Amino acid sequence: GMVSDLFLYSSGLFPLLGRSAMSVRPALLCVYERYFIPLGKSLQPALHGLVLSLLHGLEDESEHTERIFHFLDLLCDSTGHTPFYSALWQCVLNSPEVRLQALSHLLA
Image 1 (cartoon, rainbow, N blue to C red):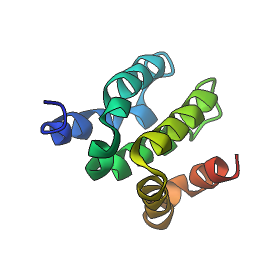
Image 2: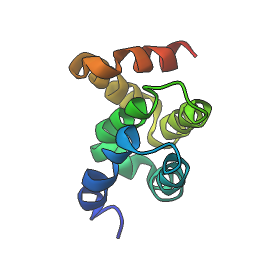
Image 3: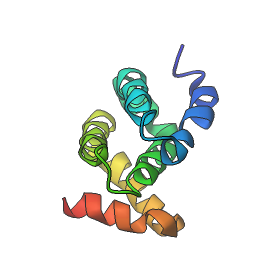
Image 4: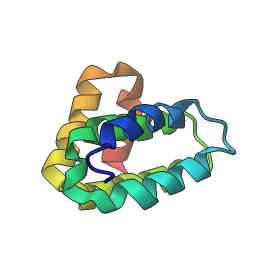
């Protein structure tokens, strides 16, 4: 199923959000919402990559910002607060290019 092949899907999909055209982002976010959120705690091995991808999607203030913030909240509820915030702080620590976005989410 999806969980056993998570690495295959995530390695191709996660890097796209930060680099995709604005017209592609809604479709990509739909894929994330439809297929990744329902995985819940099974998503934890890929959580850091997904959070990092979403933070890259927040680099520019676009019409998708609120949707990505909402998705991060759904992700937190789906995977659990401790794993989610662990992944978020790991992004802050290891990825200086998304620190501002991560802190913006924390303060929102």
